[in-house]
Amino acid sequence: MNKLAILAVDDEKIILDSIKIQLEKNFNHKFIFDYADNPEEALEVIDELTQEDISLLLVISDYMMPGMTGEEFAIKVKSKIKNANILILTGHMSEEKGLDLMKKNIVLKVMQKPWREDLLIDFINKLSENVEEQNNPNR
Image 1 (tube, rainbow, N blue to C red):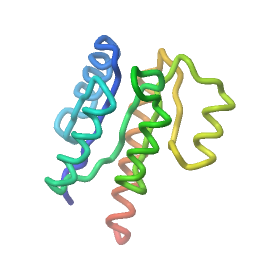
Image 2: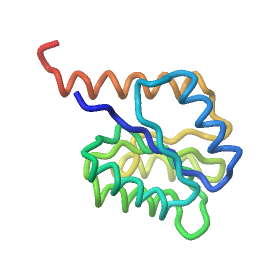
Image 3: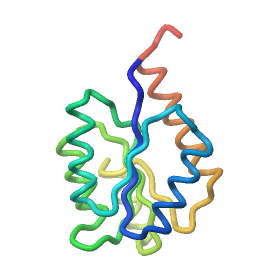
Image 4: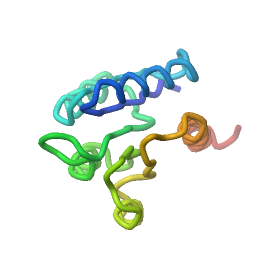
């Protein structure tokens, strides 16, 4: 199976650095990691990964970013990759809005900032297991 990628996008460097530390500490070389500090750059990264035939396991996105909300970004990602798994990290979204985005299948999950590292890592592990099962049904 090809390596899977995780892309994180957040306009706050400290948040992006925290995500990077947590992902690389917990998953070492299991996934390819990419990071972007704005949604436009993240969309370019998605195009590059697609051209390199690398599958996206997960896109982790901030909700409040200059120029484009996490919801708008998620919709653009879904237009490129219909079954993209998107996790929104937010300190600014109501629970109702998060539930609505999940119900409409725009995002897979919403986590409030500050997030718990163990919950993020557990979520990624479960997502990875589900993808492996889908790709290898006779395991």
